[in-house]
Length: 442
Image (cartoon, rainbow, N blue to C red):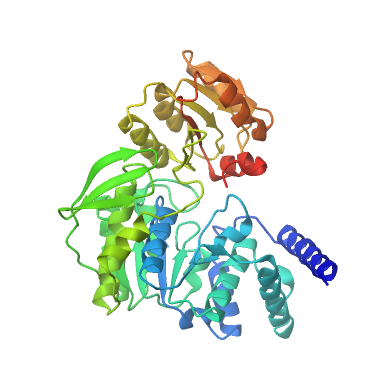
């Protein structure tokens, strides 16, 4: 019996691997036909999105952190939640989770086969959807079948042509910080990027905006809210004071009440947390109940792989900062900790990012840099190219190349001054993915 079960699991694992390999992984960010196609497929499937209470989250930075915090608060208060987010680090299945548990290979294969049957009935082939579109739709079907109370639904890139924009009116539309990233894909400047992102606002939804949003971006979001007949959620900003900051997290005083611990480090997480408090207030206004002590408990137990993850025993910090804003937040955190020894940095970046400015920001605060090649064949700047860039422009920094990303941490541990010297792994989700091959992050 046990052998039969093992054989079945092995078959499912092979089928799952082959499905993932077969999916179209190219970006279609300038293709206006993609969202209507996803909407059409949702129609064929009897509109699973309309059966869910969706909190749609978009923005340049902080989407996943905001979603993770909100999920922890919901779960602590007795609500179940589904979470769709990207990109992944350990497994593609991370993108579809219920209460922190990712979808099983078996379930993913079942939903994929269900979609293929639907396509046959409608005379289209398996390549009718792209990789991201498959994951978007499978997540909705999965969440409906598991009758989750809420869905935290994270946009992939921008908003206008993002597959998540195919859903009907969500309960809430939430914006994290919008900044300049992915130029020439979703916009050349902040106004254009904001317009692209604001396109997810639909009639009847409540709109929640990051309290520190750039005024240019906020003006665009407010205009779109009014234009489509959505409701702008007016909210008095909470007073959040950081009483103490360490690599393990933040001790917070909220509206004069001490005793809150957020298990995510980096002062910038306070801005994401302020969005969570707004979401909670909006849900409370809609009749949902949150208990202060349970919320406090949830915040102390937030887990998110690769976003300011600190491993105390090895003194290693993993952070998927992948653009200028993200690196600024990471550097601010490092400065706030007043480290006695400058960290050793394991760094890998994508060539389509503004990595020159990222380097200008982070190089002054580290002792040495070990370069790695991110786990993305088409977009990665190679470890050799990054090392050459560093040696040319930053003469006062020690640079080493890790040809094998999995050996980078061993190298960093060998060359750092002592175990008191922090190792920081950053630059891209794909850098963390490459490092993860030896399972050091789990």
